[in-house]
Length: 315
Figure 1 (cartoon, rainbow, N blue to C red):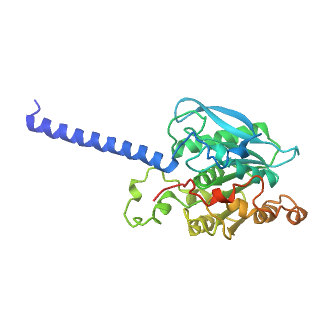
Figure 2 (figure 1 turned 90 degrees about the vertical axis):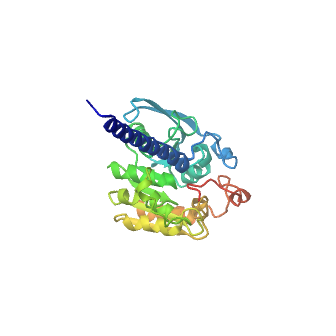
Figure 3 (figure 1 turned 120 degrees about the vertical axis):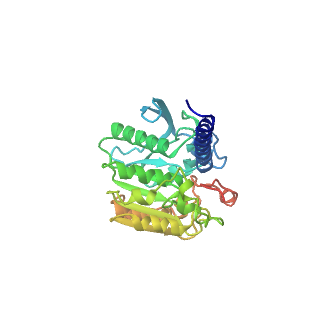
């Protein structure tokens, strides 16, 4: 018969294990909230640009949740039937409508654009996003594009946290014509290391790792990595580190004066040149005739760009 002493020891060990598991679960939940900052809200400075976009739903069976998932998406088609198709993956905090200006700018560059909300964002199903769920959502959107536009050249474009999601997707598929990453990073651990308290050994505690540098090394499509020189949230050197891990062919685009949120607007002409030279999109005439006036009707007003903006991570 088990002695009282032995029973107390086993019970104590069980309680410690339970407490550790509960603590790990709580830590994971908090990190998911902190990193994604999920919201159903649209940033007021961008909602106007979503007007006129087609709304659609992408439904699929989630292997991770064992249930039916439903993603809300915005679709911006081109008149040309042979236009390249771009999957846009947004960053943290706001819904996909908040990225409508960025989607419009890519449309101006010749793409038909599909933008999605991950589960837990906007009108999509689910409550709290996670790294694995976001990867699954991106793949579901990519599969939708492949079914609906099988003959089109298909590209993946991610901004900020969405850049890490885009990089993972590009490493998993073999039918991407190119990968565009803007204002992103090698890993969450690398971002944390730039904080004032970044010297603390918190790496082993990170559950949402987003190891984009590892993933980009496996990408077989051409890669464009863009970053604004004035990005205060994700430092340009982090974008450069991500670029260094990408195989050829690749291109590094540092946009002078670009912030975390307006790099594609400030660098529109540079984007056009890079798309032509790296991906063979557009023509030299397109570059000469590109729109030089900024902001355009699709850009966020300058006073809004100067205001506090959504961030990927907060110090």
